Length: 317
Image (tube, rainbow, N blue to C red):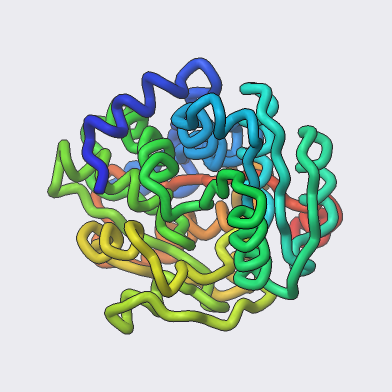
């Protein structure tokens, strides 16, 4: 597994390639006995937190691995992170995506210089295709979450949260495969174990939630959702993130589709933020008081802002 020291090393390694994103007070969500702040990873260079893990992973590769290039499977944000990181380091990249992924996300990755290949009807099929390709062509497959370098990179957010608000007692994290919440939880709980970590996901196909409920990694049916970045399985052969989630998550909240849309609209109207569905769900935990672990000083992670302009326009009308 990884430690706080691994995450600190990752922060030193990636700091010149990323933004130290703002952490801002929300007057709209705060109450007399609750101070709520937003950690704005939607303002990261590629529009989401994924760049942190991607650049940390690519920096760890040896010269021969870099020469051969890298591949990744993505619903959008991981692909952008890998594509941007690869371009910065002069590495060739190929991104595999299923046909569920919106066209605007594919184009955004292509614009960063990556070669995009559409395969399969869902993330799991695209993942299997990429695994076969990696073995056949001897190239590095950059996993979106179940990789120690990825987890450590995402964990750097936890360091920044504590630096900006040492008194935080609750951190709410959108959760899919578990790399983000796992890294943040380790970074925070190794320093202050009393801080509560709340996972939040959509009700349609919440893979980590169902796996934790079953006590082991399980497959879920991937459904269309406004929080599509959180779709996909955690993997039946999950090595790291499931165990970290078991050990560190204090509560898990699921959000309906209408509430995801409400969160997107609320962020725009009250915070002047453009956020994707996966990023909007964290604020709904506070807005609707959906967890018994909400403390006095709360951080809501706004994990990304990559949303289709047409969809966004419909939601905020």
